Length: 514
Ligand code: PNW
Image (cartoon, rainbow, N blue to C red; front, side, top):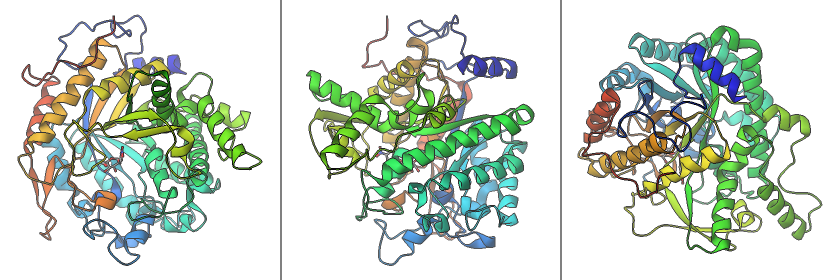
């Protein structure tokens, strides 16, 4: 797969340094200053439809599972906030493109709201106003020299498809493929970078519990529905990719990937058990999705299959809670991506042991995770600034899936919302330094970096209490005015010069490969 991809990118003049004899070979230094990104590296900023658009029921949009949950009565998010208006990007996208210009980005990663285009989920009823809206966004970006990168699914499923069981129902793959085909038809003449799904590992949380912190749709079937979801999502992704290759690729000449989240799991001690538990935790989080697509052999990781099967048997079940992939499905999924989008934010400590409900993925993994207490923590308590975990993640991914072109689709810091965001600036300079070490010293093939997020937005269950924006948004003001934070000015310089200044370029806590 990768040689074909490499040939394609060479022909397109793209960035990917897939040439195994080039200076990017793992373990060799690139012949440019260590604080510089490759000349054709792409930089960007990201958002997601439900988090920024607002206009939740305007111009024929249907209800999503997030509309449904946040309108279900009571205070669901930490501050009672909803995405009804959010940052109002539905009306302010032209202003947002100006901000992207100011940031000197090459790409804008945004998502399409499925129910804005297909209010009931199916292609039997297309909402032309939704198509018109995304046409305007795409045209505005291109008029300003910014490449659109479209996420097809960033968690806002049409509620009507949830009524069918959502991603636990394999029929959702059919609905997704029809939706993807429509997007290729309508937008593929101008959109050349697609990711099918954003971070299934995290949105599977919506099927792992129904407590006050759970994501939509709050289905309480941990260890069962989340594995069904994984299988449906992989099949949906692969079929959309194959459809692109057969029907659209030769004309549209774009790239289709998937975005997966990878927290780094650091063993709590050097014991064999803790090291094995950390490795297994990575396989349950990233490997569950990445191994079927990016490994040479395909299918779910062996350790995941074995542990879920053993626990399922011990519970008196006749079959594994992880539904097996057929050999046809394994072949269809294997190699079904032009690149891997990685969301990376933080690192956790791991010990071997049992935790979590029975059954649950957490319990199946045999890994007990905890915070690394001494590192700075965000008001989103899952997030700590631990830069060296980024380099370790990239090295691990590139060793697991050799030659796989990677783009960082999200990385960022949440705070309480001030304009002088020193901690965010510290986070970005430290994480970008680790990224440079991974690219220039370890030879990891990363072709782009996209910061989360362009704007303050609805941070899911945290509401507006945690802000990830490079631009501050005043949610009290009906006009939703935007204001640059210090970190926006910092990143604008990095994106323009494609380098970190010596004062921002930090040594790595991880030893370089020899
Ligand atoms: C991502 N974790 O979610 C999402 O893609 C964004 O929509 C979201 O706003 C952003 O990160 C910030 O939260 C994640 O616990 C949520 O490791 C939680 C984790 C990772 C990603």
